[in-house]
Image (cartoon, rainbow, N blue to C red):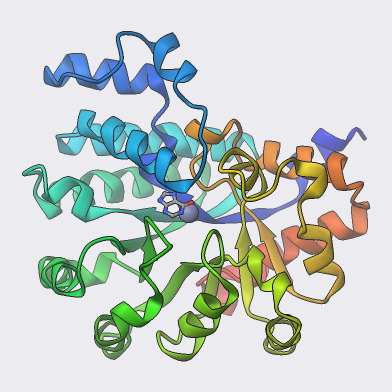
Length: 326
Ligand code: HPA
Ligand code: ZN
């Protein structure tokens, strides 16, 4: 069996996926026309050509600009459904979708509009493809903790449909310690907690996310490799890392996939998973992340099975839901 067929057939979850980051330029333009929203680009081709990034911030500036095309419940449904079609084709059995409500509420889109559309797509994907899913609300870390609390307030009537919270956006200068009270409140509410840490930020941010926010998984976490004591801890505690190889190359965390440290992390015994982050912007969905990483780092099939199995084990599901995948 060739590599791609092999990888497609492996049951896997996707645990680090920003739904706004699945907005392909074709859909962005269709929605912008439908909603009479102006975009900063003239065409699909010009948009794709603009996707050359120097760092995280240069990507985020475009990503927030593109999200302006999303206004109505149907838009969020269409966005998420397009993702599920691709995820199903890639052999994803379960997906945990990040969404950024502050990106939308700041433009006057109601919190419930975002959630209703995404959740309807989650139900439709389950009915059509048998894919299970969860929604994880991400707080934007460049905004204040107070703004995060206001967003949590808007989420309160909908907590039955929100499984966890995360922390994303500009990492440097916005350490996890800025959100200690917010995450404490989220834990009291019974929400699962994750955070982006150690993508561009230092290993100390990973330690803060674990000790201060008490997160259950670290999103990215690749800079842990700079701190041997932290590496040993992550291995001992089997903290899942949701690594996004193509994203890391596009945002210049590593100069090329051949220089990515995923295999080093795996060899150190960490619970590494492979994910696509913002696939419309970074050049590939989850299967493409597995395939290119496998080739660049010459991963064995046993290593690829380990990565996929880690993703099943790290999902926020109960044993009964997980059992059929194992
Ligand atoms: N890092 C931080 N924030 C983000 C990302 C990311 O990779 N993608 C979307 N928001
Ligand atoms: Zn991310």
